[in-house]
Length: 582
Ligand code: 4UV
Image 1 (spheres, rainbow, N blue to C red):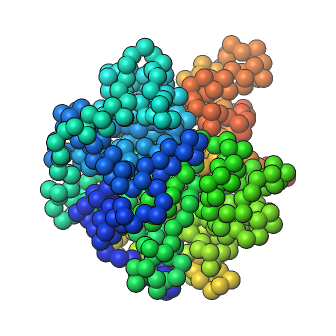
Image 2 (cartoon, protein in one colour):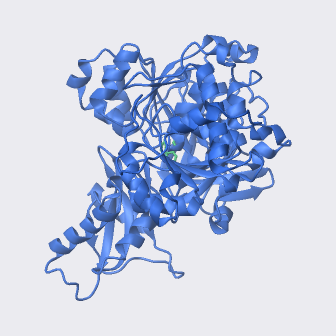
């Protein structure tokens, strides 16, 4: 018997499947007409640069026309011919750019702004991106990666981070997003691509290609359809409705908006959907910050009177460990602090609440493969340590390793998810698709690779509590680290004969990678300490900062493997946990 959302949850409205995300946002049948915005959808928290909803809609329209001309594309051609990478810090133009790409029927592949050139190159090649939009701070990295993927420098465009930031650093006169908008404003109107869509096209067409390593292996392109995004936006919105009757009466759209924090990376599903799409759909003003700077964050909350924070656990830990600094700012506008992407410890939640007794400290759980939220706590039903109740339209099962269905409370099993937000699958990876997306008698499920229990909250509702991670993924400050990627890289070091990488707990970062290495015979380093330093450096030189082996390096004699050669990571992890307990 699958578990379903609590009865107080309004049913999920019909999810439209023949319109694009951008149309959905402005369509009065679902979203809101620009007139319905009392706040500007996106505002730059550093410079104040903003567009009201009318101007933003025009801007997207002009940008879409400009893109068609720039690439000589038609809205009707296949989306796979129109993949554009966005590799940028957060800006007010980030999400509008992706909507313009959707308007011309293309795909936006969002790359983590923390990537180095090699990591970006992997995504550009894998996704088949034809162009990259970046910001000046990341231009050098972009050019290095683009060159290796035969993307000419003419196809590298600059997103302005400040009103007049148009200077170029590499001597080449890159076009800016502004240049394309201006050119597009002089071009004849184009039909949005979804005008020619048939029923179901929105469920079939890919809109975003985000990268996730899933349950195992290297990062893979996750094909997220227009319908997936629209579904999860409606699911979250419905679940969030402060008064359930209001939603049914559609009073919500007029009555309930927030000033929300847009700090989480828009390249990641949490910042992209929960932080940006849901906010824009609800009519929130999203205050965009390019990157995490603790004092800038506090100042921005104070200046813009932000009332909804979207954070990840390490940021909350930073707050609770910096009480004196926090006290210097007026954060009285905040009503709710939402966290997800990694578990928030009960002690940290308690600590935060002791600093801010009025805040609703909420937790959500989601995945790239479910186009974000599966469940979350709502202000009326908060239970620390829990990830809350299922959102409408979501159905889950708990399945034991032996394949038995769990039907009772407080018994752990792997969480399987069924929802209109479960993505199309991984790009050209049949093996991972077969392992992750399973067809059952009652429909298609996604196997999350997370272990969970269902428990009754003090308010008497069924909650999901994530109890462990079965899959190999490591989460560092909410970022994904694929052990397989680090292991493959470590094997290119001459001193490494074999290795296994696991995540170990870290106070500040949640988890950090630790490597167990089998030394190569006759390695040239004179001592173990020198070899360790050399291996750590090998990672630092070729991988982005959060992938460093902060959990350390330990030498072992042999990597435990199954008869079929599969690394037994769980065995290593259990041994490590045992060691830590002692
Ligand atoms: O694919 P991904 O990087 O995706 C995310 C998404 C997190 C979100 C999104 C919207 C929310 O509202 C929200 O609260 C959280 O992180 O990584 C997916 C894996 O991250 C772990 C879990 O192992 C997933 O399979 N994870 C995500 N949220 C939690 C979590 C959580 N609350 N507690 C424990 N693990």
